[in-house]
Image 1 (cartoon, rainbow, N blue to C red):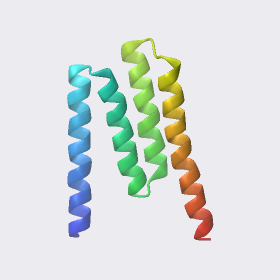
Image 2: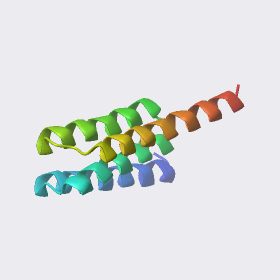
Image 3: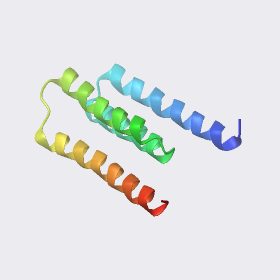
Length: 96
């Protein structure tokens, strides 16, 4: 395992641990941001499918636990996913 992979794995474990702590303490904004941070990590590693799943699952957990979600949070999450998808498509088209 290369040092880059070890650092990436350590970062993933740290982000997952932080997210678990947020969920345990029911810190709703931190839960949402924790999912976004973890999604950004997977995006940076080139795994768009997992990135989108993590971000969207964050919204589902957020909505399930806290029942009422303001429209601003939904729009923010949608924009976050769209930015990643647009950036991924742009990079993919440059490398074709």
